[in-house]
Length: 109
Image (cartoon, rainbow, N blue to C red; front, side, top):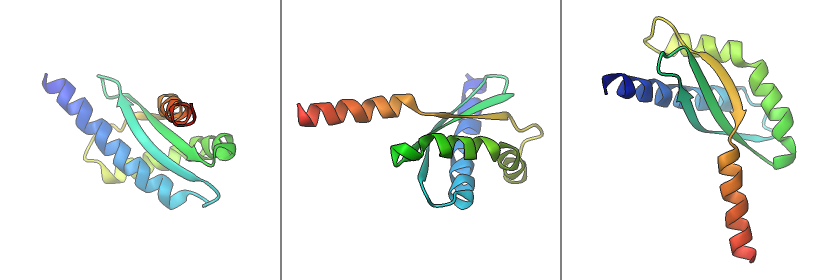
């Protein structure tokens, strides 16, 4: 149980710090929102899930975020009290996109 709690804390901290970092680094042509973060139980890998508005900027924003991973990791190292910061992967949050699509269909249905 203790391990789950630690993994959850690390995930939440990475989510918050990633949101700060991407908000600061973003070029303002799109809005990048950090939705969630999943961290492996061994704390070696974390996946940060983002959404991008407008939709047409999604691909460009994802490439931008992936290019910034090394700097993001440095930012995490400075701001997290951990010996080893997880390797960061960045993905589009498809679950959130699907929920938005369903909401839209229900509203217009």
